[in-house]
Amino acid sequence: MYALLRAAGSLSSSGATPAGALRAGLLAFRAWHSLDAQSRLAAGSSYVQACGGIVATIFYTTTLNSEPAASLHGGMMDLWTAAQALILGIVEGLTEFLPISSTGHQIIVADLIDFGGERAMAFNIIIQLGAILAVVWEFRRKILDVVVGLPKQQEAQRFTLNLLIAFMPAVVLGVIFADTIHHYLFNAITVATALVVGGVIMLWAERRVHTVRTETVDDMTWSDALKIGLVQCLAMIPGTSRSGSTIIGGLLFGLSRKAATEFSFFLAMPTMVGAAVYSGYKYRDMFRPDDFAVFAIGFITSFVFAMIAVRALLKFIATHSYAVFAWYRIAFGLLILATWQFGWIDWASAKA
Image (cartoon, helix red, strand yellow):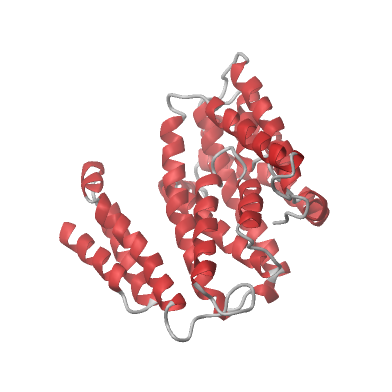
């Protein structure tokens, strides 16, 4: 198995085409996940080589060949465009499931590296799908148990109903207000303000006395789900954080830290898929075959780093509170506001 993993890693790093690199990377991914925890650690370097090789090969074949692909900006894809895709994929993966606002970070980073325009909306949809796939893979056993048990098991039926109940407020309010919010609030100043306010609320929520009455996601009631679904709608304001609002809301409503975090992950699946489908249809004309290389770089990096972030967060919250994320939000938000107030960076026209 080690030999197979090393071979796949080497092949993905030296593959002649993006398709070949993707096949080799998938082989390495499956080989790595077939190992036990100790063996995974020992084989980690080969796995990282395989994942990096996929991106590196796509970089090579799309930026250094004589006929590079068209970029999201309508010109020829160069090394900088590929680097932008890589950076934003990493940002999406690392921040999507942490309570620090992935949308806020995307707006700020995209503005700093000058990555925008209507076709960038298509790219954002793709990298969100990469992050979704990571959390689906991480909780694949629970998802399979629910699907298999749905016809007969009351626990699976209740869990599914709770997800649907929590999902519906975002559907209704999203359809009504999404365009208005995007037009007026998707800017760095709104993001910074929401980061600070959200951080203060997180500190308050963590420091108050918790009365835990729901230990696991399977113990949740429909009213718990509805309240968390309503709180999730606050995340329509960029900088608020979808995961942050649902996790802190869950804590305030009596869920354990583990239950609130896991339900936030599960709720992310229908919410993000629904948003991706809605946005994908709305911006369907922005998807072009020439952008495959950019999409592939963003998708893969988003998936890999979202997997890292999800696993790290689950381990972290077992022994820590969310206070560190609250302080990060406050510090980052104040930094953005300071650069704007003192005129160091012009955030006035920053858009997603």
